[in-house]
Image (cartoon, rainbow, N blue to C red; front, side, top):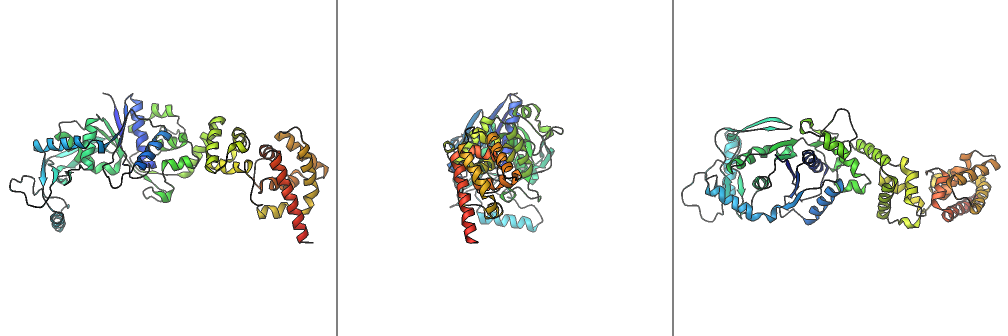
Length: 472
């Protein structure tokens, strides 16, 4: 048997972490078994589905490296097929027209509640043979079996048994003829030969209904794997307040796709005590049997830790290319400053994401607007004027423009004025960057370039002079 899995998002919003994890598990199962991974867009909710959402989903799948073998298939392009299957079920006695009004259905449910029963449709038109009432466009309902039960072996939940008496006759087509979700899913899985369905456990209650429809169509149900939801650290379902955002937001925030995929695979699956998994490791080691039956908790700190790991093990050239993109998002053209490869070498140990690296790298490409007042007040004092001026003039004349040579120059000036290196190094840092934090001063000035460093030193000297005049 060829394993065929699918990922079937609804394009009513972005691709979130839960959906991405489902897609990853489905992708891994297909790749591990040399099978096929199908992408299906369930866009029958025409009021909420948008092309923008479709584009974002496809973009996120591409960024995560979850390539599909077939599709994307769109349900809105399969309407004729759904109508054909509805007609088949009607003709074979597995479905019927129901003429109940909304008010009648409400009364039905209220009466069931009053009797202490589960509120559901009572099958009024199940075997109706009379004249249909006027003025009501009927829905089509599936004729669910009245006796027996539905049982299946879920790969995560274990054996699941639902008595047919708990299920009512599901609507499979609305009055205007459009099919419903539970029906289109069945037809799609049947037509596409899906052998394994991996999805969130919020779909578990739909499964018995879908199995009954599949059996009515003479088909064998696929193997199901219902993955528990992802929770925030407060035990509630993961949402934006927990830091869960669009997958592409993580790209914008400077996470590497390798880190996000590694994090997702560990949300509900484990392989001993291992934490780091290459794509090849995942394909080799993943199994549905090792997926946890309890909910997983989203831990943003763990994701940051993984991202830092992957950044430190990525090629400098790859990081440099991505850093350039993040700088461009900030309106900074790398042609105006040092080679991003050199910047990565200096900042790699100082940043956990590429966005953070880009924020720190800004000093090498753009001039600061003003001094940090606290840093300037502490470091730019009249006593440093002479050493800073000497350093500035000797820096202007320095022929050996390397970080080590710049640092050696600073040490020689400190020695000349009998200062500890920090007593001049920190004022120089504030002068050239506007603040008190940067890589080593030699690396900082080297990457900034001679002209911008000199401009900062001149600015600092004027600042000191002006402050001295104010207090004189």
